[in-house]
Image (cartoon, rainbow, N blue to C red; front, side):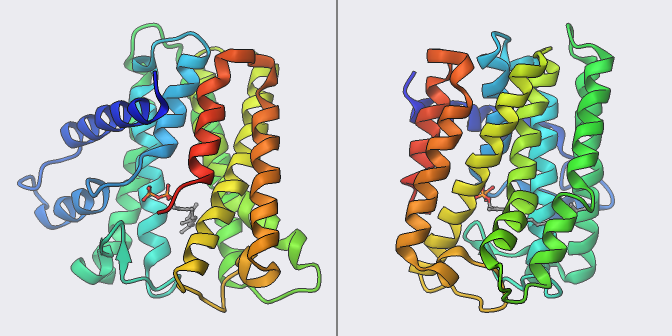
Length: 286
Ligand code: GRG
C-alpha cells in the first residue's frame, strides 16, 4: 500500500478508537473531560501510535493486537504537549493550529489534563493485556519500558535540560543528547511497544530501537528547521539550525535518515514502509 494511504487509514483507526474510549464531554467532571478531548481529538498526525501498529505488522502480527497500547502512547504524547505548552515551559499559544489547552481552560486545568492523559495513557497500555493472544508478561515489559522512557534519564531529563538550555561550548553533543531524550525516547518506546507485544526477539528490538533513535533526531531537527524557516525562533531553546545554520541542519537530517534506514537492514524489503516514512518525514512541510 502507498505510504500516504497507510498513514491516513491508520490515523483514522486511532482517531476512532480514542474518540470512543475517552470519557465523553457529558461525563462528570465535565470540565476536565472536555479539556482532555480538546487536547487529544484535535488533528495530531498520530505518528507515534502509527509506528506501534506498523511495528506489529512488520513482525507479521495484526495491528489490532497493539491498538490499545498504541492509543495509550498517543495519550502520553498529548500529555507531553499540553505540559510543554504551559507558560512555565515553552509558553505557547497555539498547538495543532488551535489555542493551547491553558489558553482555553486555564493553567490549573491544563496541568490536570496533562496528568490525566499520562495516567490514562498507562491505563490504556494495561488494557492491552485483555486482547486475545497477548501475554501479560509482554504488557508488563511495555509498562516497564514506557516508565523508563518517561523518567529523568530520558524524556523528563531531556525536557529539564531543554528548559535550562544555555549555549554551551560542546553545543552539538549537548543538543543531540537533549533531542535523544525529549524526542527519540518516546519514538523508540512506540516502536518497542509494538515489538514487545509481537514477541520480537532481541536483535529485532535492538534494530527498532536504533531506528527510533535516528528517526527521532531527523524528526526533531526537521521540526526545528520548519520553525526556523517560519521565523518561530526562541533564543532560549536549543535549536540545531539556529546554532549551526540551515545547511548543516539539512546535512544532519540526511545523515540521520540514512542511519535510520540502515538500522532496519535485518528486516530486508519488509521494512520498505519504514524507509518511505523516513523520506516522507524529511520532506514534510508542517
Ligand atoms: C516525561 C514525566 C515527563 C514529563 C514531560 C513536557 C515534557 C516532560 C516533555 C516535552 C517533550 C516534547 C514536547 C518534545 C517535542 C516532541 C515533538 C517534536 C513534538 C511534535 O510532534 P508531532 O509533530 O506532533 O508528531 P503532532 O501534533 O502531529 O502529534
